Image (cartoon, rainbow, N blue to C red; front, side):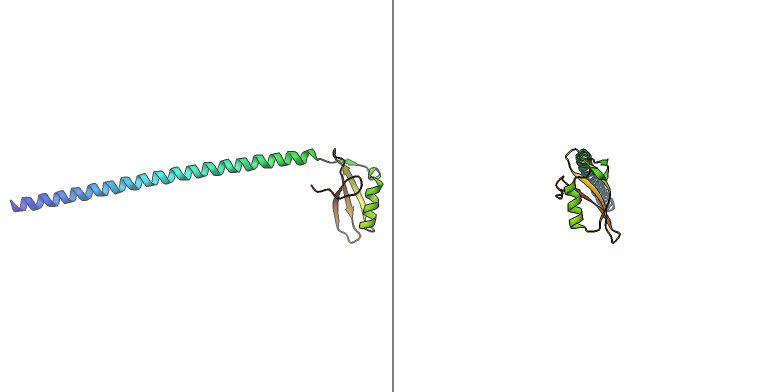
Length: 130
């Protein structure tokens, strides 16, 4: 009888250990599921933020597109602009020009040292910030 009692205690202990292991596995599975849900939610938020940034960039591009410049003949550049270039960039050559609907001019200029760039100015030759 004593042997039977000891065997029953060992069996009960084994069942208890098995049940605890089962609970631990279930808890770990639940934790993994919560972590997966959190990762999915974070990914969704990140995707929405990226999409919002892309929409903002598109809006900025559209705003810039409204300031598109149309090429004009160099001779059409107002005298105030050519005078400003001669004064501030002695020896510079005007290679091209364009104008936008806002009345701003984009003037392509080459300097004597070989550098070149574009000046964006109003019709009086004042710099325009873009």
